[in-house]
Length: 190
Figure 1 (cartoon, rainbow, N blue to C red):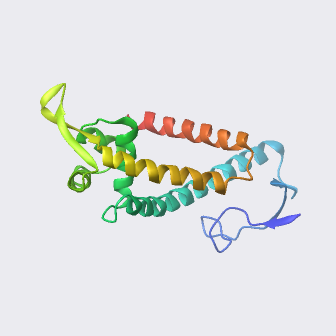
Figure 2 (figure 1 turned 90 degrees about the horizontal axis):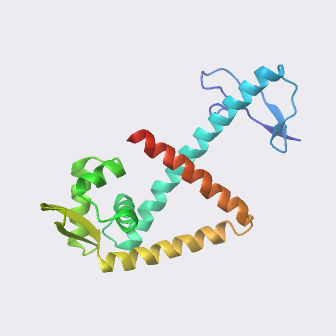
Figure 3 (figure 1 turned 180 degrees about the vertical axis):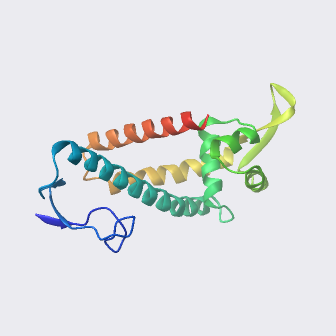
C-alpha cells in the first residue's frame, strides 16, 4: 500500500485550509474504510473532478511552454500563440481574421499583430476572399506549411518516443477522449 494525500493544497490542506487526513491507496483504489456507498461515490466523484482540474491545469501550463518553444522552432521571431495560429490555418484555413479571433479565443489586436508578423515573415498569405472581394482571408504559405510540417512531424515523433511503453489502444483512447472534450468545449463556446 502507498500513502497518498487527499486532494487539497500543496501543504496537505483542503481547499478551505483545513487539514486533509492521509489515506492509503493501492492500485488507485482507496483502502481506508469510509462512509457508506452513496457518500463514497460522491466523494470519489468529487476527487475525480479535482484530479481532472489539476491534471488539465498542468497540461495547459506545459502546453504553453511547449508552444512557445515550437513557435521558436518555426522562426526565431515567433511565439507560442503564432504556432497555434499556424496550426489552425493549416488544419482549417483559409480563414478570415475574425474567424481566427473566435476560434483562438484571443483578442482582435493580438491576432492582428500575430497575423502581421506571420505575413511579414512569409509564413502566411493574405488574399482576397473569393466570396467577398472586399474582405481578406488568410492561408498558410507554402513556406509556412513546409516549416510547420517539419515541426509537427518532430513533435509527433517525440510523442511516439515518450509514449513508447503505452499500448497503442491507450494512446488511441486518450486521443478519442481529448477529442470528445475538445468538441464539447467548442460546442459550449458557440
